[in-house]
Length: 326
Image (cartoon, rainbow, N blue to C red; front, side, top):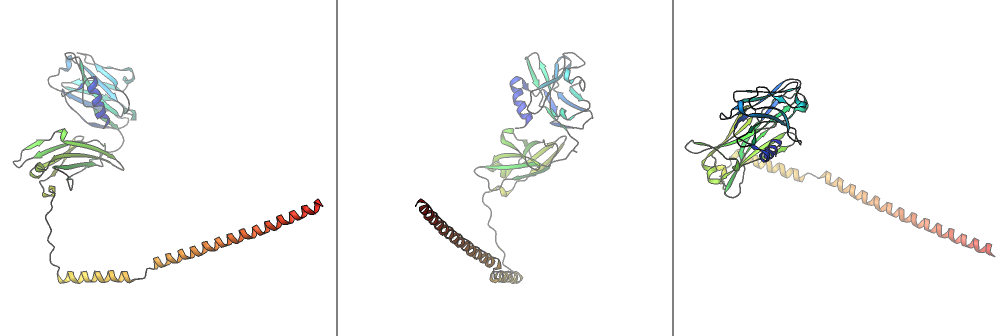
């Protein structure tokens, strides 16, 4: 689960994430030492002039930090002490903004705008923007979509893959088009997402649909990366069927027969060639075995010789001791 997804779950416990925020970029890319502006737009029913406004920051693995806030009716923001030098806030019409001057690496984090609703006594958070601080250039994802082969059961699985992009955050959206041309957005409970991190990050969205629906409808996967969007169609196809039609082999032509006969003759010649590699290997193994046996015999002979010498030495010592005792 991504940091933003985890934070959204936590925010749902202390306040709520509401549709009162119309839009906020999923991510932004900032350059070091430059200025960066992050914004979010509220619903038309919200009056910013009479609403308390907050901006929060959260770094990976850390708690939320309030950057600044607008009191109800205030035209200027009040920043927290540690953010007073480089962070400033603004509001115009239905848009809230946060500006960071002299961006540094430590500014990479998730940024949320929030509203305090006095009527419900709750704080409403936006979905958040992930800020990347890097000198890398923007790279669009390579998008591909296809059905999974040999599906099981009554359901079919469609996959949509995005890889090689920077920043490595995308948003998947699936649409279904029936035979009459009507397009329908598919619910989140029909799809799953997975993130694989290897030499390059690969994000995959998996859509599970009924077999009959997969055969009679066309599906489109859209991948949003920043302000750009790419779409890939998975057309109605018989490859969704479990049973494949039998293929009929054409009769071979005389030229094909000659070529096949030549290939067989080459195979026979290869089989008849002496296997020098195997012969040499057997010879080496035999030589190793003989050498090993010779070494064993030498060790046995050495052991016997030493034993005889020790025996004679002990016998001589005993004889000398007896003569001294007399």
